[in-house]
Amino acid sequence: MKNIIHYAILSLLRRWRKQLGLTLIYALVVAFYASIIFFIASLRYETQVVLQNIPELWVQKVAGGRLVPMQTDFLDSLKNIRGVRQIIPRVWGYNFDSPTGAVFTVMGSDSLLQGLKMVNSPQKTILNNQETLVGTGFLELRGLQLGESLTLLDNRGKIHSFKIVGVFTADSDLLTRDLIILSPASARLVLGLGINEITDVALSIYNPAEVDNIGRKLDRRFAGVRVVTASQLRATYETLFGWRGGVFVYGSVLAIFAFLILAWERAGGLSREEKQELGVLKAVGWQISDVLWLKFWEACIVSFTATLLGIVLALWHVFVWQAPLLKPFLIGWSVLYPDYQLVPVVDIQSLLAVFALSVIPYLTATLVPAWRGAITDPAEVMQGG
Picture 1: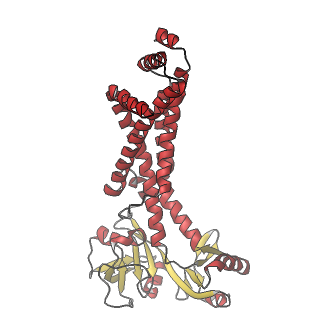
Picture 2 (picture 1 turned 90 degrees about the horizontal axis):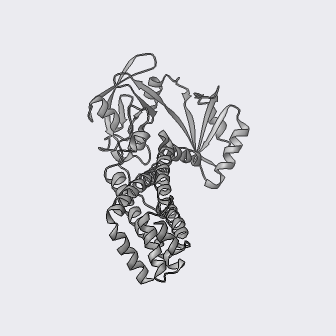
Picture 3 (picture 1 turned 120 degrees about the vertical axis):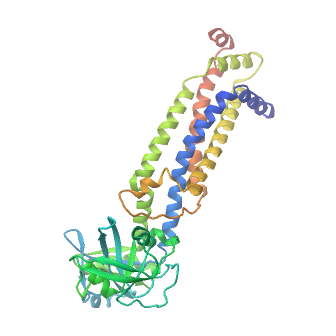
């Protein structure tokens, strides 16, 4: 076996120009597909991190298939639900910023949300009606700085001004880049909600194992409400970040299509030189199994070299260059998008997916024509060559 491997290396070196070109094309195909795999793995990991502190349940009022405000009186009905530890009324919505053309998320809260960090921590732990906390996106688009005033238009076109007392760090850009936090009263004013209206309700549950049961109980008890669990929200975000813009489908189809073309060309048959080489080897006493092992090791050397090179290129593209070829598909139509840093995440599952796509088809495409050549009579091969 050692001699066969040595001969396989020498055989590849004799045709090094052809093998080099094949390996480079092969590596580029692998790099593209691996970039998608690593990109999605990083986004899923980031989603799990930023959503780890969210409540277990949300209750929303729906009319005509759309979310509508609910009255604060509804909170009294939730106090009798067993297993509910805390009831958190939420005021939030979207505000279109005509000067920049961006849509921002406005949330009402009188203090910093759990799990979010600030560039400069606000001196006050409670926001008054003239103060706000903002994400980095608003500051960049408006050209504002900490301590300056932020102006917003409410749904009736009236201007409201707030002092920026805190800015979220870039580490939380996935959640906060387009976020504006106001006091609950100011948020209601900007969003056009009444003093007794809220957007939805978040519920904290004592026993996480009872979340689904409590959710079903709420569905049965209250008509016209939609219950969303934290697991459903995480799954939605993972799907959004992993598939938005058709990244995975687009990349997979292109990568597989390009690789199939390469594999088809390879499986089209042995070249004249390769047929003659197999004929000589069989004439000097090589068995069919020896020929197959030779081609197997040649294919392994090429495929593993190309795959490893492609993985290195993918890691560099995604985690060093921050995936410039893939991020535009995640951005979609938004004027404002998260300018976050992709966290290097490479797990065994991702690597196995890359190797399964790249190595196995190439080995098959190499061994099938090699087997056909190996079972052909040496004299026939030499005469046909």
